[in-house]
Length: 262
Image (cartoon, rainbow, N blue to C red; front, side):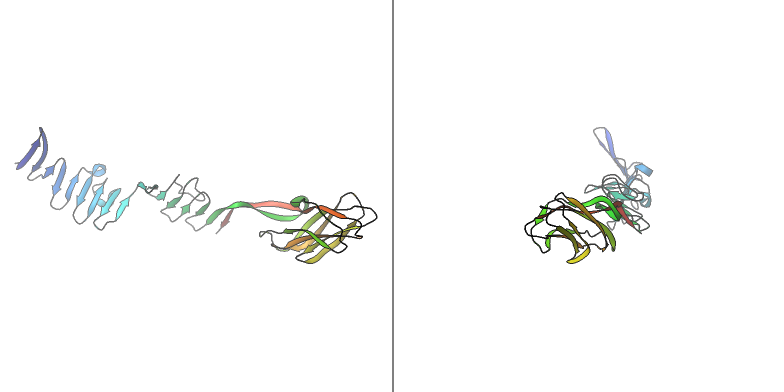
């Protein structure tokens, strides 16, 4: 009944006939070469392809079709892990928002990294490199401080220092601007003033004190990129005017270190 039977070293290696079995693999004219059923199934079938892990190719967790299409529910390719619902590196993240480590491309179309994400509903989020802060109003809290001293014996206005406002400042802000001012001899008068992009703004400040006096003024309508200029002069070239602590003061609030846009 067995037709041809092969035995090597006492072990049956194949039998040819109705069963067509070689070392546990069945050879079938239609179904090709296969062994096992369900999760233990391995099959290679002409015109279909190769698969493993299920009796039917459509149910198999791994398959390669006759056309070369690969389907795998898990594995590793080039350091990337294949899962049933995602391709990822580091820790798989299939929920909303940021991943903890690596990146995850989910089968719902979402992308997640520690600093950037696109959720399935098209919500986009990213973490800024630097914390973004907002200037919310005037106060005596120092925001920018140029502490390097400057001096002059010029009776005409002399530019001593400049502050360029950052790109995140909302338009039309009122800034509290301060500087210290003194004169080398009380017989003279020290003058100080603020210019905006080359134009004088605010009120001219003065003192005859030989000790530093803080001058403070709230000046409106500052925009991102504006240049604040500090100029000083003396009433008499015999007397030196000195200044320091050129400052912008106000209240700063962290907006977010994550920007989200829908």
